[in-house]
Length: 367
Image (cartoon, rainbow, N blue to C red; front, side):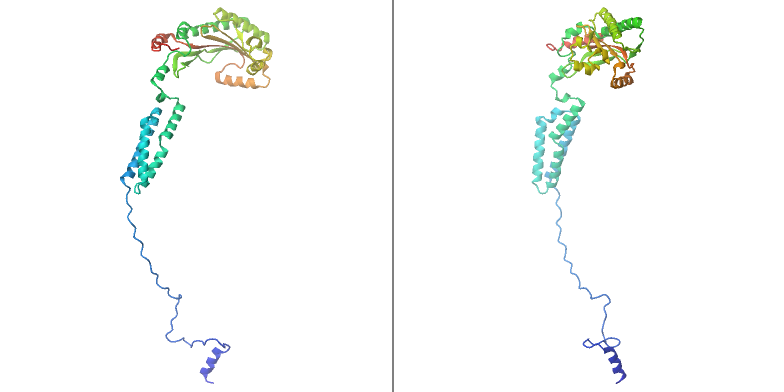
């Protein structure tokens, strides 16, 4: 066997049925592809032509401008607090016009987008929503000027108080007379109680003048007068001593033209339900009450006189002490003892009397 045949036999031994191996160096003209088969070229389809977008038509712009203008008008009305204008015929007619323009724009292909925006603006700002906002603003501020008739505004300026005869106001004590009488009574009560029981005194708070409402939605020319108070520095806890103190005060106020003192806290005198007395004064028994409250007046004049005794010795649970401490923190008044106060409602200052009479001439039949 030749060398060539031996070499060939060595390569094909044990390969029965397999294809023959290539000769050394491979077949002539053969080419190896390093990265697999070459992909076939891809054919790209041309993109479809895009039609140019058409601008919105004039109807869409008109709808948007109209809705914005209407919203600005409503907001201006809201700022001016002119609630009555919001529900007027003119404003409702304008809103109908705006709605009609928006609907027309929505049915137009080129105006639909702007019409939808206009619709959103109108839904946010319309007579109903802005009217509700205006009503809330008016309620919070108390300014109802825009909703009142001329007759209502005229009644608002009524100088007296509805249900009270203005002539009674003119004939009763003036503010200055009430103040002078209160000061005189306080001085005499303090002198008597100091002389008989040795009490010392502390002024409490300041005089307060609160304008009285006239019953027609405005303020009258009258005021409610609350005097500065006077309080003893010493406590008054003994039952008999309390009765003696109130008896002395009664003598003094009667000398100043008032009626005898009247007890609110004593069930036998006041006629108030005992349950209510216990709630107001700590007990329905004057011997164990935390508070005594006596009262008198000089009707038909407006002066009302109050004498109050606070007694911490009858405080069973500490609640009354806590309330007195809070009051002391506000006004500086003693925690317990006697306190004197005068209140007069619907009084006219002498300085305002002439103007009061002049203004009354514009209100014949008012009372």
